Each structure stands twice: as structure tokens, then as C-alpha cells.
Length: 113
Length: 112
Image 1 (cartoon, chains in turn red, blue):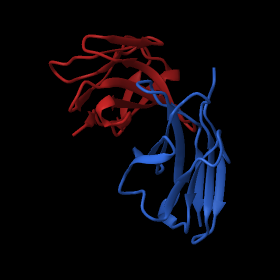
Image 2 (cartoon, chains in turn blue, yellow):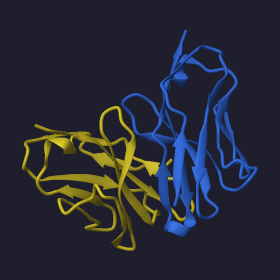
Image 3 (cartoon, chains in turn brown, red):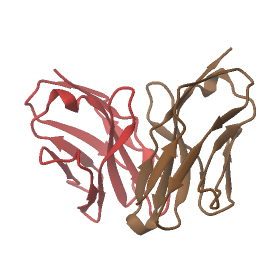
């Protein structure tokens, strides 16, 4: 079946530190992969996506590369800011399952000045 | 940019009462979803809807829950007889085939 496993949080970093949030997936087909971000009190917003192997999604300084060989889609940012404090969700969609989306459990990030 | 809108933003109801949560998906999207998030916990899938019928539902989506697309724009989630444990944020989402989910800002349901 399809599933997403995310690095457990919470994660606390100092401003300008390097961020990695690990995500691995299991899929029966050829999924698309996503990172969503949820700021306090808000809904989920798409952060970035990759639709096939070796694609790199990027947005707002965040990056993630679709690695088929390791079934991973780790989120990275070179220098985090206080405003990046949020919960980050890895997700996949599998076109073989009727456009169904599967979410990880979320990783809470707090960036301190 | 078009967005998914949800109303109300906060609903307070007494245990045993019926509630209807409303959503207006993005107009050209074909797939509609409800998710919920109990405070501080993960986002849980409830149901997906396509072509005027449920395409998939989770174990959470029992007989107390129903969804409807009563007209061309609204997508509603009804909880027939609310329980305390139904208290959560409920997120509506929509998508086109192969495209990312677009989420609304959620309805916070508080059951007292």
C-alpha cells in the first residue's frame, strides 16, 4: 500500500541553521510527492512538489529531491528564519488510487532568534 | 489565485446535535476531500468525492458522517449526532487530476 513516514519532531533550530526533515515513502505505483506547510492557526499550504524521479521541487529557499532509489523526499533549507516556524507535512499522491493523497504525521519546526 | 473557502471558521455545538460544515472548492476542480486534525495531532483523511459519489473513505467516516454536493459549487460535510471526540479542525480540499490538493483554512468544531 501507500504510506509516508516522516521524521518525528519537534525540531528546534537557531536562526540561519541548516534544516533537514526526512521523509520516506512506500507506493505501489509512480507517485507524485509534496511538502505542505501549516503555519499556526492556518490551513495547509503547498510548499513544493515533484512529480517524477530525480525532480527537485523548490520554493522559498526550501528544496526536496525525489529519490526513487531510496524512496525519499527529504526537505532541506540552507538557512532557516524565525518565520519558517510551522508544521511540515510530507505527502504523496498515487494516480493508481483515484487521486488519493497520503500524509505523513507532520514535523513541528521552531526557529529561535 | 482561486482558493477553497470554508464556513464557518468556528462552530460550537452540543453533543448529539447535527452540524453541517460547508466548503466551496475551486471551481474547475473535480476531486473533493475532507480531512480532520485533532488539536496538535496529524492530519487524518476522512473522505474523497468524485463524480458525485464517494470514491474512498476512512474508518473514521462512519454512519454519522455524510457528504453532499448539493449544487455546482458547495461541498458539505454533515455529522449527524456529534460526539465530544469529533472536536477538531476540519479541512476541505479540492484538486484536479494529478494536481496538488488545495486546502481551505478549516472549520474549528468544538463539541461541548
